[in-house]
Length: 271
Image (tube, rainbow, N blue to C red; front, side, top):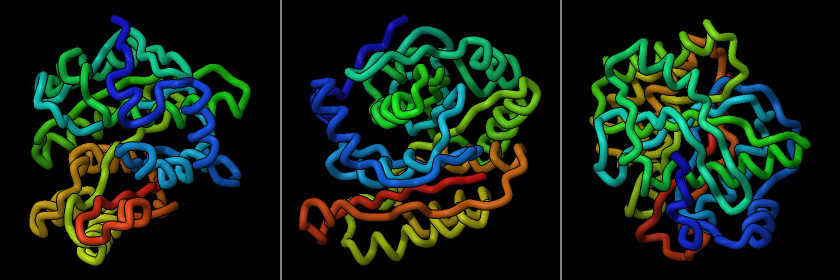
C-alpha cells in the first residue's frame, strides 16, 4: 500500500521547495551522532519545528527509523503496525521495512498489522520532512521506516512491546533509531506547562519508563505520546542505553505570543 501525505498543506507546506526551505531554516549546527532513540514533537512545523530541527540535526541517519506515535484518531487496533508499503511526503518516499515489521508481529500479539490507524494520523508523518532533509544532507537515500501507532497500553504492555522492539534490533543487528513522537502539556499556561513538563522530562532523562508512565497519570500531564515514550525507553534500556539529554524545549507561546494556552515541545536524545 502507498500512504499519501495526510497533513501536507496543513502541518507543513505541500510544496517541495517551500518545505525544504522551511526545514532547512529549522536545523542547527551540530555534529550528528549515533543514538538509540529520541523523543520528538509532532505539531505543525511553525510551532514545534525548531525543536524537531534541533533534535534531528544531532542524529546520524540510521538505515531504519522505528516510529512510535500516539493514536489521535481512534481508528484501528490498540497497537497498529503498518507492515508493508511506502509513505510519501512532498520531499521524498519512505519504504517500510517489512522484515522488521513482520518480526515484531511474530514476537508479540500486542501488535496488529493495520493501515486504518495510519491513514490520517499526523504524529509520525511530521517526522519525515526532517528525516528526508537529513538524509539528503548526508548524501544518502531515505532510511526505511517501521510505523507503529499506539493506543492506551498498560505499563506492562509498554514494557513487553519495548523489550520486543529492543530484542529484535539486537537479534537482527540493525542500524536503527527509535523515535517516540509526543508533544508535552496541552492548553495550559506557559508557566504550568514548563512546571509539569519538567517532571516528565526528568523521568526520561533518568531513563525511568515506569516513573514517566506514573508521573504523567498521577500529575495529569497532558503529554499525548507518553505511551510511545515509555515504550521507547523500555526498548532503549533493552539496548543498553546509558544516558539521555534534552536538546531543546519550548512552548507554542514563543511562536504565537499567547502564553495563556500553550503546548510544550521537547526534543530528547537517548543513547
